[in-house]
Image (cartoon, rainbow, N blue to C red; front, side, top):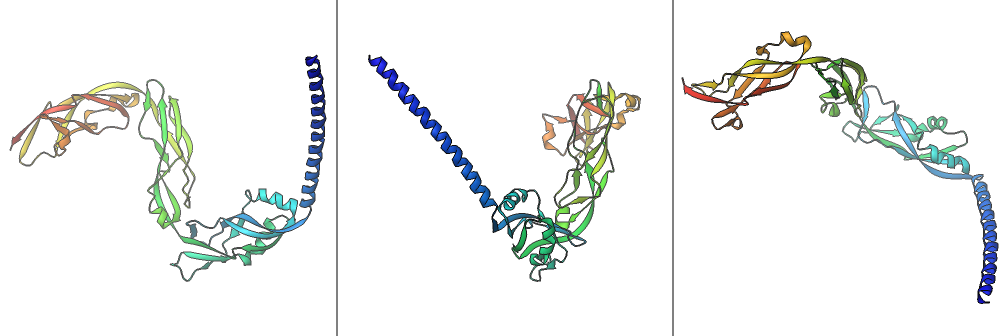
Length: 331
């Protein structure tokens, strides 16, 4: 009996919940429709408002370049319908106003690098950049302040940034070649004084088995222009073989009025050499030295051997021993 009453009670509750949910859904639907209609009505009205608008300074005077942190936004006083303003709120981030610097004036109170531009005199140049549905009433600030510097030129070297791995039994066969080796860069002297080279964008080469050539883009530098934006890069690659040579050791910075005897006077070096240069490789193309002015190189009556010079077509130079005994005699 009790369970039967409970089931009937639950049925009644569920029916009432269903009715309530239906009424709520209908209410929310009409609320949504009325909100949309209200919003559309509002958008159809004309408004006067301010828009924060991005700008881009262009056309600096000949021989000048913009430096520092120039203004990036202005506030436009505009009149338009609501839907036009809504559209512009989104478009403003994508389409900055082009502000020509023609007519810019030197600030007499500055050190010769600060300029100003009356934006109120430029309103007519902004109107074509805006939609026909919008009326430009004014702009703030009325005056833009910014800095410009004289443009200078400088010739700098190109440094290729290359990471390469080579196929089995292959190696870099000499120096990486860049053409041209230098370019002319143009910009403010304060920036150019800090630049001694221009790097390429990184190039990654994997398991290459032959000479690789490609056009490399140069890494851009803010406020600096290049005479060209690409260079030709050549990475020479060849097969290699292993060889050994006996190379004499040269003592450096020997104390005055003394004579040094190295034991041994030669060491055998082992290295990889490109096949094409195998028969050209000679001991005199290497220079092994012991520097007696380097106290860190001397330990326990022995001195460390260093490779001071080697051809650019050899790799993995190794030799034994790394230290040699020495005797110092008075002359």
